[in-house]
Amino acid sequence: MIDNAPIQTIQHDGLTVEGYSRAAVQTYWRLPELKLGFDLGGQPWSFMGTETWFVSHGHLDHIVALPVYVARRRMMKMQPPTIYMPTAMIEPAQQILRQFTRLDRGRMPCELKPLEPGDEVELSRELVVTVSATKHSVPSLGYVVWDRRRKLKPEYHELSGTQIRDLRLGGTEVTVEHRQPLVAYAGDTSPAGLDQCAAMYEAKILICEMTFVSPEHRKEKIHKFGHMHLDDFVGRRDRFQNELIIAAHLSTRYHPIAAQRMVQRALPDMLQGRLKLWL
Ligand SMILES: [Zn+2]
Ligand SMILES: [Zn+2]
Image 1 (tube, protein in one colour):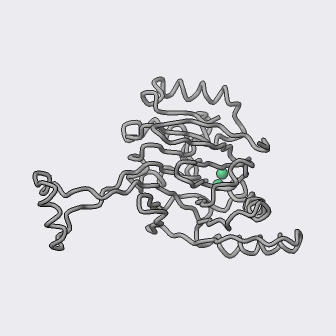
Image 2 (cartoon, rainbow, N blue to C red):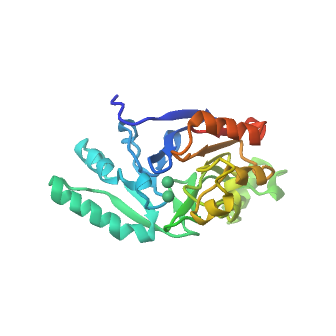
Image 3 (cartoon, protein in one colour):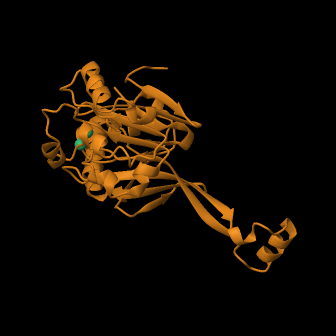
């Protein structure tokens, strides 16, 4: 396999998270079991087989690999991919693909689909993605991937299989939809992107940014730029119900070891061991 871009990997409860994210450098994530990815700031060769992507916003470090990704899939005779993104990005992204077609003489077959906060994308019977507002310096979105099941309504738990079947045949709805948030991706955002979407705190796995960690970078100023600071995690430590919290997108101003030290000083238990710095 061609190794053209760094990837880190973690496994949690049957899900694999693969990716890399540094502010102003490149951000890309993939969950192979869910057959989807977030952001196209780079495109490791091995990510090409994933055909559904959700882009958080239009900063270069999150979208610049769109043309190479689409072109590679065409070259490898794979199905045109589906790429969801904020509505405001659609027209510029189409233009960019068109211009690359002029340069490269290659078609760019793909489906770009616009999303707004409150939208829902049904990927399969079991998998739904909800879209939430985040707060950044350009139009931006957060995403939550839900496992959707139908479960027997509690009032029918005592009934036998035959009784349930008879009810069903009689036209009674015996099940109710049950959703569990599996993975939340906040993209680049001030803490508002988490605070305004309860599922960000409830998802099994939360992937979010911690761009700034040093005390000399004041969190108030960081929020204006639409980013998060280590202090925001400290202030919200009781809100995270996630089993795994991946904090990424560290600014290039920090050395990873220095950043790790600052985080460990501020959160000695690393949120009961659930916080993973993705450096
Ligand atoms: Zn970024
Ligand atoms: Zn950004």
